[in-house]
Image (cartoon, rainbow, N blue to C red):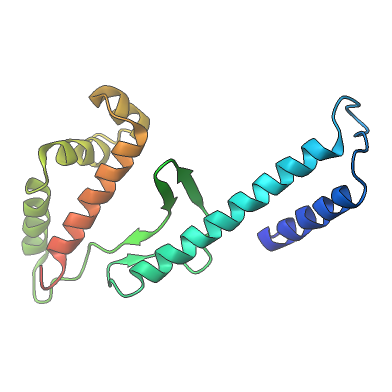
Length: 165
């Protein structure tokens, strides 16, 4: 079932629950329609916030030339300080007239220029294939901090590899 069909189904179920309030659920007599309606409302509100966050990410990065959020993207993660939206960062092929060796040297120079902690987190993920949780635990960071540092590394590298970088 497509996402929009699921949302329509949940919206219809919520309307039905609101039209016939306070009935007991068949499988669990201790639960009533109010609790289920509240859960559906919270889920739909979260989806709406996520769609807004994704739309804002698309708007902010549309003209960057090196960050892209796919038109059909629906994945997001809400944290205390904002939303994470999946996207793409362009880091290759952007240096006009440069050989592969020159491009690689520029890439390594950009990695070397990263702040120490950012580089350590980035290298742990890139070279040692550690997942975010393992990096966070080993370095005494939160997962969100690891995600932020990886994002900052990718952003700095992509900027360094742009033709004007």
